[in-house]
Image 1 (cartoon, rainbow, N blue to C red):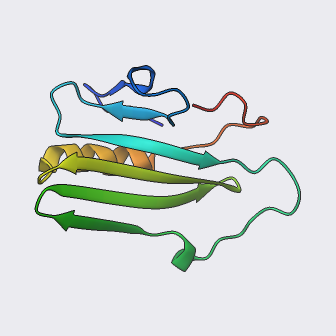
Image 2 (cartoon, rainbow, N blue to C red):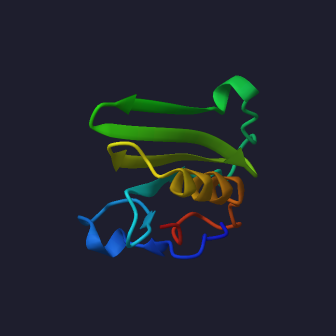
Length: 111
């Protein structure tokens, strides 16, 4: 993934076991990655309906979720913030999500 300028990994600041999480130090929200890697067997072939993005907004929070697949592996990527997000932050997230790739391996190096 190509990390947008001013975004940084904040995973170590979260409880143990938290998935990879990045945020802008001065931002409104955070982008979190939950990954399911394909390591063998028949390669999954998701349909376009299986992979989608949606935004949910209530008075006090906004959540945008993407379901993506590359090289047989999957990720659920979630952006969440209190209130309404800054447009530039959502644009950064869209660009980063589009740049996600999965490297070969057994998945133990993911985080």
